[in-house]
Length: 136
Image (cartoon, rainbow, N blue to C red; front, side, top):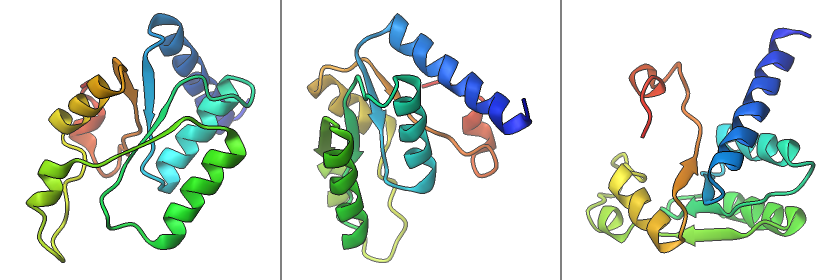
């Protein structure tokens, strides 16, 4: 088993264990390559099925092709896709400025609304070293 296979195997194990411990999960899907890889891993962990909702936070700033990709994968994979907007964050957004889309409080509000207890999401260790060691 090479290193990539080992990481995939560990990831699938963690995903299955999380689901076994708490059935009220949601997958945070931002449509990027990292969260799309996580979606693929979840589907692989459950033999092509997605046993919990997929949450997408709509920023209003995605390319049309990204939204089409999201909608097509939702249909193709039979996802329960929940699209939510964090209006508080969007109201304070300035055009051309970076947008912090998913502050913890906003995600918590959306999870409560969707009756989910835990969100599964990816953190890039290279870009967010301090966040990679934290649990939320």
